[in-house]
Length: 70
Image (tube, rainbow, N blue to C red; front, side, top):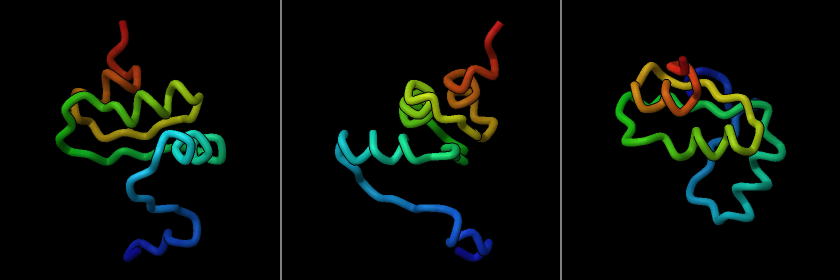
């Protein structure tokens, strides 16, 4: 909110599976700025829904986002 993006960004809490699918269907992209991430399941879900992702340089997120692919 301090960055002035609240009109263009939707901050959501816990979603059920149906709500998550609807959200990804409307998404222009999904952003995951996590500095510590165990595996990156939300980023993987976004990719599986064909949503472009922007991730931090956390190793788990980079791999899930396909940035460390051979």
